[in-house]
Structure formats: C-alpha cells, structure tokens
Length: 80
Image (tube, helix red, strand yellow):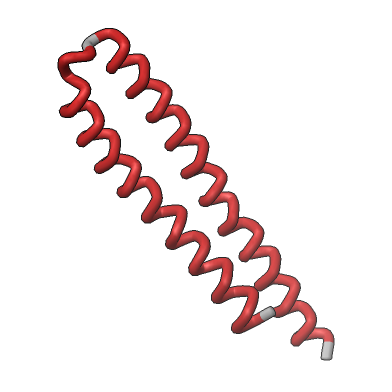
C-alpha cells in the first residue's frame, strides 16, 4: 500500500511543479505587455503593428501555460 501512496504523492508534486509553468507564462505576458505599452507610447503611429506582434506573442506564451495546466490536471485526476 505504501507504493500506491508514493505514486499519488509524486503525481501531486508533479502537478504542483507543472503549475509553475502557468506562473512563468503570466510573468512573461506581463513583461511583454509592459514593453508593448512603452513602445506604443514612443511610437503611436506603429500601434497596429505593435499590437499584432503582441497578440501573436501572447497567444504563443499562453499555449505553454495551457499545456502546463493540462499536464497538472492529468496528474491530479488520473494518478492523484
């Protein structure tokens, strides 16, 4: 019985570590948005290009956070 409990504990620990991916993505998105606001304030005429690039980058960054969330859920509900 101790082996089963060890597997559950390891799965929950892995889910917690996977959740760190969401934190990293959130920090990255905040930094990117801050730089985009700064860029628009310097060059308002380039707002459309800056926003398109920002949205593309945020979508790519968000996908890694979603993958981390899926892995965390799989570890919790399938092994936990």
